[in-house]
Image (cartoon, rainbow, N blue to C red; front, side, top):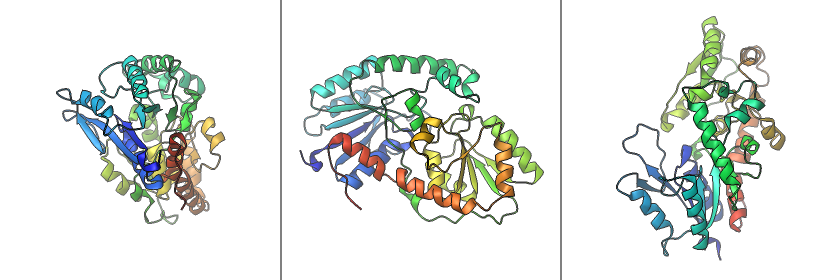
Amino acid sequence: MSTRERRLVIGMLNTAGQGTEWTHALKRFTGANAESWAITRPQEQVIQFTADRTYPLINGAADQAWLDLLNAQSKPTHLIIESGKPISIKGTVRRMLFEAVTARRHGIRPALLFHGSDIRVPSLHRAAFVGSPFTQDHDGLTAKLERKTNEMRRWLNLWPFPIFISTLDLRRYVARGRWLPVVPDARWFTAMPAISAERSRPRVLHLPSRRELFQSEQVDQICTRLHDEGLIEYRSVTGVPPAEVRSLVEWADAVIDKIGLGVTGVMGAEVMASGRLLIGDVDQIARAEVPDLPLIQSSTGTLEQVIRDLVADRSTWAARAAAGEAFARKYHDGRYSAGVLAKWMGIPVKQP
């Protein structure tokens, strides 16, 4: 079967727009056909990312996605199911497993993909990280995630197909997960004004998508104190539409990302690609696989000193920023991810 005859569908969540970015990277670097599919929820006030094909979650349209998947004329050769959700979204993990087996019988090779909270078990995370956000209940969120992720891991014992993970820390929960690095929008790899080591008060930004899991209250307390002291300029913003994130990152010299969670994801890749300093917290599992990751390691307990040290000694800023840009291009510009997918699909990657 030729490359052009291979067709990938990733669905149905398009979390952080990654389904679209991965399929577009596969098309760009291999020439294979690929589409992201997603369910739209018109009544919900959530940030939604553009997918190649969408199905509204009304009037049985979600079931239509499953029917379209098996259609003889448009049937894919490969399917990645996000977060263990059935293609029709409605239903249990059992239904997802049934759909995957059915797809395989129709000649479609399925795989699972996890993004983070869909498989990160709070009790295991708590045991591994002193500063884990899962030491708190978060209005029942911790218990809910514990229940759902443990159920998912039990079902994985029956899952006979490949599994992808978007961040390396997830190997702690899915030992056989294949890393499919996140891919920021291509505009993040276009020129942006360099950070300024000459600024009297360096600019520090925190852009949490989920404040309760990113230790944002502690981060805000520490950084607001440093802001009031006159050491830095600090901004903390939540719920920012994707189109506005770049301008906020451009304002900053350093960005604080996901402290306490042990991972850096799409935001971290965007920050590095833009030549900003990235302050965060990554699992040793990730450090072991990508030792060249130029993230500045910090916990809530060390954050104040980390920032004070950065402000006091700015001689490494330019080198750190350049290392971040190089790392982002190496792993996150789409070519590496396209290579991972191409290997699974049995097709070559175009040479630069």
